[in-house]
Image 1: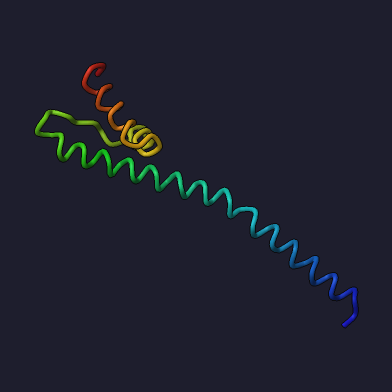
Image 2: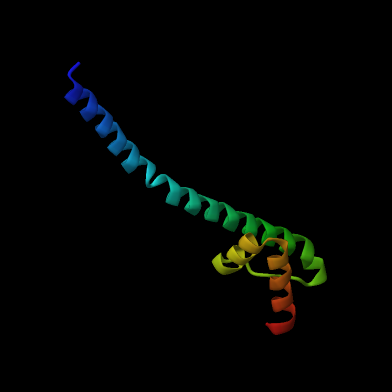
Length: 87
């Protein structure tokens, strides 16, 4: 094969890898964020299911699910404290 064709093919493959590989990282971060928000909503669901007998009810919306998803159990406890003493 001619060296120009080989170099052209390698350069083309490098460009394809650069263009295809670039969007993969932001999508991974967005996917991880969505998973954390879903886990936070699940935390709040179980809190509302088991806390209803104690009078604990934290609404499940995007903000509360984000707080409980990104902060975990301390975030859920903070939401309970805000709901109990401030609101």
